[in-house]
Every structure is written in C-alpha cells, then in structure tokens.
Image (cartoon, rainbow, N blue to C red; front, top):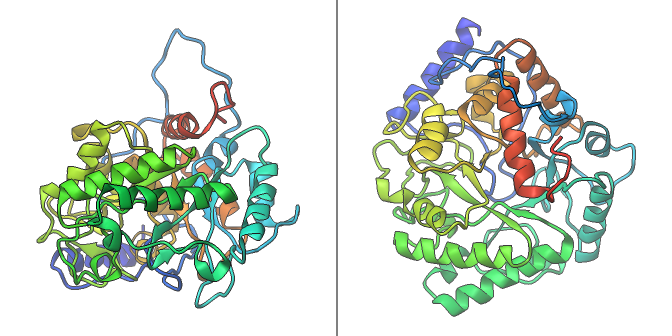
Length: 413
C-alpha cells in the first residue's frame, strides 16, 4: 500500500473515532441517489486492524475432499451485484456473469435520482426480469435481493403499481396484528415477483430520533429492544412463510449515530450501547436469522481500526465468537466511496473476506460499471493467488451461502 493511501486511511479512521463527522459513502438501504460505487485500479493488500490472513493450505485430512467447482465459480457465488436494465438480453454483462462465471446474485433498485430507471417499472416487468435472470442459473438458486424496508426505503412502491408499505417507525408500536398484516404484505409483494432475499428488517434501535441515517428516515421500529425484537420476529417469520430470506441490519448497531450517514461511515464509539445487540441475540435465540449485514460503521468500543464490515474483531470475534452466529454475513455496499477511498477497491475486498463476511454486496449505483462483477471476481482470484485470502476462506463462505439458498444435494459451486 502506498504511503499516501495509508496516511489517508489513518486520517479517515482517526476523524471517525473523534466524531469529526461522516465519510462519503452510500449505505445499502438509504433512499435512491445516495451511492457512488467505483472500481478503482487494484492496490496492494495491507490489512487494517485484521489479523494476518490464514494459511492458504487447508489442514490435511483423511476424508476425501468433495468435488469442487472451479475457483472462479466459487468466488462468483459470494457476490451480489447491481445492474441497469428493465429487461435482459443474453449478451448483457450481468447475464454473462451469471451464466458463465456463476455469479451468486443480483440486487434490484428502482428509479435513481441521478441515473434514472434501474430495474423497476411495473409488477409484470419485474416478474419477467426476474424470470429471465433465473433462467440463466437453471441448476442453482440465484439470489435476487432488494431493499424493501417500508416507508422511504421501498423499491417496489405504489408509483410502479405495487401496494404502499408503511415505515418501520409507523408500524412499530401498532401491535402484533398490525405488524403481522404489514409483514405479510411485504412478503407477498416480493414473492409475487420472485425476490428471495430482502435486506430487511432494520433492527437498529431508534435511540437517536434525529439520526439522519435511521431515526430521521423512520427506518427503526422502536427505541425499545423488546419491541424491535418482537416486530422483527413477526417480519422474518412472514418472509419465511413465503420462502424469502431476510437480512438483519446494520450490525452491530447504527441507531445511535449522530453524523449524516447517507454518504458516510458513521462513528458510534461514544454513543453505542450493548443493548443494541439485543435484537440479534433474541432473533438468534429463536432461530430466525438467515443473514446478518455488517455495517460500514466505526465502533471503537469493538474495533477502532476498521469499520465493522471490514473488522475481524467485529464479524468473527463478536458476531461469530461471542454471539455464536455461524451463518451468512453480508457486507453493506462495498462500492461505498469512503470504503473505496480509505482502503482501496482490492484491499477492502480482502479485508471483508478475512473479517469473516460471506456475501459481498456491490450496489453499482453511480459511476456504473456494467462489467463490475467480472472485475470483482478477477480481484478475488488475485487475492487468493497471492495468499492474501485463503482458498479455504472462500470454501467456508460458499458452504454457508449454498447451505442457505440451495436445495439439498445442489452443487455448492
């Protein structure tokens, strides 16, 4: 890593730890027009706050190894990538990434204030688009993801002919029956067009109602952990009843943030409290967790050297170790500007994988790159080749993702 980049990264983290404000990025789930993914040139792979990468040589075993798909296809299974288009042709780069490389999934967006129409125009159009995507992966379960939280973060909304969806804040204190009807409505809408992963519910506590990332956007059920846990229980169950996975976010908690995080990494070092983990503890105890999203949030109480999404202490130490989660962890948008600028495109990917993340999300909103999926796969192949990321880490992540999404007996590659 160049001295200039290292100095910049340290300055970024120092500023966050001191509460000096937010860093420029777009978190997944914020309203349209707030992202700036970019694929900068590959940089060196020096980690920040993470332990040395594990050995790339797996432990010897007397059990015959299973037949694995080529490394490139295994890597591709770990990516969820955004693209542009209301329809799909066979020669579209995203189609080729799915059919040829085995891309794990896509994320759908509605109209963006900057780039215009993305993937949503009507119910029939979205259902047809999803059918076209799935036809490219006939032997496996393609992840088709979306942010359908309700309120301001509703990609399938009435302006495209879908039912209206109240915000989490509006429904949070309405009681079980109202939450049940609300959750069933969301799940029914997603099932109707073939979406199988909702990056929701938000389980942040609304401890700072003026928080520009959560409270001010009505994205949290309540400040009371018990209410958040109960409402999230109802929502995740309603999704499971329609065979749709959910992702709890934003781990380890974004509700106390004071900085504007529409475009920045929040610093919650001085405001975060342990009870913000209660919804995760509760849902884990109930066996209702499919995916947990690690946030681009600096929490110096856990790890002052890296945002949670890139932090081994947070993902592997806290979430997997102390809380006992051994399932899929997804990142927030890896194309976020602050992540890219502070760590570099290639370095950030290596840090995320070595932190313990399994699904890497690239919203691909602004500075759009139609061939982004291929470039990310190429980068990870390089990280494995030079020993920065162990191939065993790839296989561990693939096993988790395929175990969640694929039917028994399906090819995990």
